[in-house]
Length: 444
Image (cartoon, rainbow, N blue to C red; front, side, top):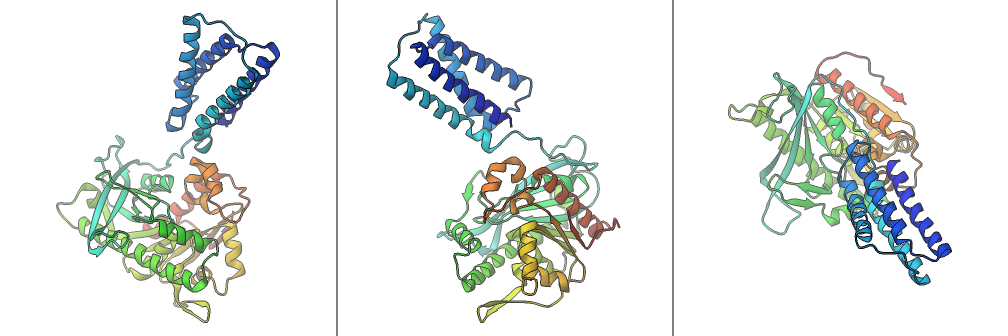
């Protein structure tokens, strides 16, 4: 909202100056200088009073206003007077300034100012990142003879100082998160914060070359693999044949589940080591949950089926690809073996409606029907990206990433807060034995 107001005022003033320049047959150099100095002064006031929360999205506009203000001061220092401009230059100069303003405010419009979602638990929250090398697996995405490396970031209960090394005293259940296709480990930051503040240690994995960008602890940045992005988008848009989609999904599941298993094994070994860092010593390896968004949710569900140590699973708006065991006669074969762990599916409205229409063949619906303990939650008017923090950080990008031209009507903040609350309640029930009633199915 603030970005829209500022951009509207700046562009409006430029348009007024173009009109007045024509009407008065003057370049209005001195008047423009006064206004631009006033704009920069007002901008500084908004920053100092914290009406504008200074951040990267404001840098370009601040620089532009600062330069314009400096040039305006020079007009008075050099005592320049107004002159008669060429008609052709009036339009050109006006368009040029409007274009500069649009470019300067674009980051503000894409990443508008917002109030972060604050955790509600009793603990402060600390965080720490590690890059791990899997000595048993080669990296298939590079031509070099590299081993696969994964970067994980932990969020954990901390004492009131909130420093990274100040982990709160006690043992805390472990939760492992897997992001969506070309998401990244920070995609559900508010969720990790909420869980850690209530006494969980959350490990979010960057699936290297599946994440849109992985920043390793040595500073190296790795972008998503182009072929993976291309094939994932093709599968989502229905541009790939069914059998090829099945083969791709199996390949993705293999990579993701091997990543999660490697991280789980590393954590369990570190938790039992006397020489490990405090974050590992504070983990309770007897109480483990896995969850993920989209493709990450599919991987979490597969891990829940395959790994005995996992106690509870949440799939956030993902298709449970791991339930698909084969492909025959042009159709996927879905297992009817009961899902062995408590599982919750959280759906966007559109996903849920599609799942209902294919309930006899859709993996999530079959798993829910056959599971020992299953739950479903649907949020009306929600889209796929509403279950990540992107929907509040950048509503513009969130809407652009929705497929099929779906109308998203849910309040983004309500959706992610409701999701976070449901995730906490579910894991509290199954990992901490906090027995509050959880509806088997709810549409909110």
